[in-house]
Every structure is written in C-alpha cells, then in structure tokens.
Image (cartoon, rainbow, N blue to C red; front, side, top):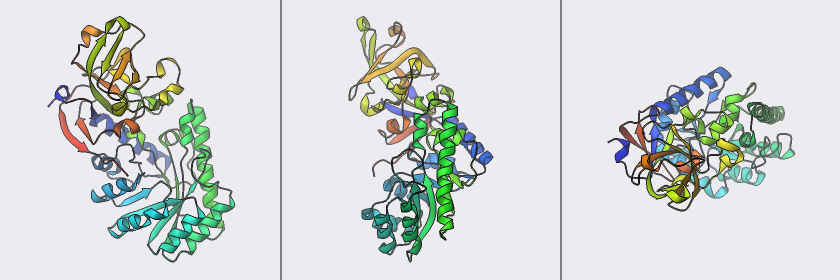
Length: 377
C-alpha cells in the first residue's frame, strides 16, 4: 500500500536515505582508520543492523540487555553492552555468552569489577572513562582506573578488554569548531587511560570512542581502535541543527493525520502527541527557525517542510501545529496527512514497534516492507 493508507500515527523509514547515511559513515570511518561498531539503541532493528554492519567492521553496540538478546537472536554475536553493568544482571549476561554472544560488558566501579571477577562466568569487560560529560566513567588519570584494571586482570575467567568513553557533551556544542575540541578531548582521555593500563602491565586491546558528532568532525583518531556512532543512520532535527546531517538526510518521519482546525487561532491539531513524538525538546537550545518545537511539519508526498509549520506543543495524543504565517487550512483539511521530522529520533522511535519502509528517497512511495524493532529492557 502507499503511505496515505496507513493508520496514524506510525513511522515511515526511507530506505534510500538510510542507506546513504550508512554508506557515508562507513566511508568516514574508513578514512579515519578505525573500526565501526554502530550503536543500535536508536533503531533497535535487526534489519537496520544488517545494513549497518554489512561487509564491514563486525560488531554492534547496544544499551539494554533486551537489545543484546534481540540482536543475538537475529544472528549478530559481536556485541558491546555500553551501559555500566550491575551484579544482578551478570547471570543474564552469562546466559547470552553461553548462547554464543561475544559480549563485552562495561563498568566504572571497583566493587562491580570484583563481582564480575568473582562470578565465575567468562566475561570480557571494558572500563568506562569519563572524558568530560560527567555522567558515568572514571577519570583517565584517577587511581580508580588502575584499581579496576587490576581487579579485572586478576580475575581467573575475566578478560580486561579495554576502555570505552562517550563524548555526550558534543550535543552541547553549537559549532563544528567546538565539536572538534570535544572530539580531541574524548580521544585524549581514552588514549591516556589505555596507556596507563598498559604501563601497569595489563592488556588494553580496545580503545573505543565516538558519538555521531565527534566521529563526523574528529581530526585525529591516533590510539583509537573503534568508534560507536548511532543516530547518524536516521538523523533528526537536532542533528540538522548541529550540522551532522542535512535536512535531506533525515530518514525517519512520523506519519500523522490532521484531526482539527482552529482557524481563528491559526492552529490545527494532529493525532501525534507526546507519546508519538516524545516530549524531548532538544532543539529548544537553538534560536529562531532552528527550534522546531516537537517536530517539523513536512509534506506527505515530498517530505519538504511546509513553510513555518511546527508542532508547538503536545498533549498525550494531540499535537498542536502553528506557524509564523497563516496556516494552509484548505491544503490540509481534516483527515489529510502530513509527516513530522522528529526533534530527537531516539525518543520518537521508541514509541513504536515497527517501521514502514519505503524507497521514496525523500518523496512519496509504496511501503515495501515492515521492519520490526525491539523495545524494553
């Protein structure tokens, strides 16, 4: 069927744009001379993962145990679980290893490192490094780093696999030059930590970095072995705002129906609210037209922005659309459909269990496939 016949709200995934984004990142990473371990926490789809790792660099990154289990069930074995593990999940992790997963765990805590080493399972473990975001991770020059490394290296069945860091604070940058600086801080922190571990007599084969912005704009990857970008595959309006994707590269939209007009107030309503679009307001950090509210309103057939229209506010199932000029009510009658480019695609996609795939290259197209995705933890 064509997308105009789909029930709303629902996700539309443009395969042509997705493939171009995947190919562009693969070329970028090859130029940097490192391996690509794409993060699948945004797409959570085995079909997307197969495109992202095809011919390539091998493994993937996940953010939940459910994702690890799902991708293993779909034939992908080389998996890094890039969230600090807690001891209560070690049995679950071991069950994945026993089923054939080459699973890498993550910790920044000496007590947890001791629990891993004492568990008895065959575990590969990365130490998380704080490169400036100050979320999780140990500082690269801290005594805790070598304490954790020593505990893991001494574990009879535990393998110290390396270090991992994430420059999430690239998302606070507002220029390419700022991102370049953060990307170098990220690299330097990971390499310093790896050097200290090696100098202490322990192995450190993996040095893992990378958000989409830092990979796109990094000038130097000396000492890094792999990068883990993820949102580059789909793109969103925040990525457009910081310059890692163009608006013509956003591969995911939400199909929604116009459900009401308020002509006197120059407003209309759609059936995509907070649960369908998310309430994340990342683009609020931008000024003027770069702030798209809860999503940019686009034409059904061309995916071109409809001048000035944004989702200004959301209720649970209602989205309020307004603009800086009179709305085209006659062109958008009640029952007509539009497509919303999401503010933050990771949060938006999480509301759905599948993608309606088209090969429209930004325009109108027949649904050629429905790709599943996993949710939950």
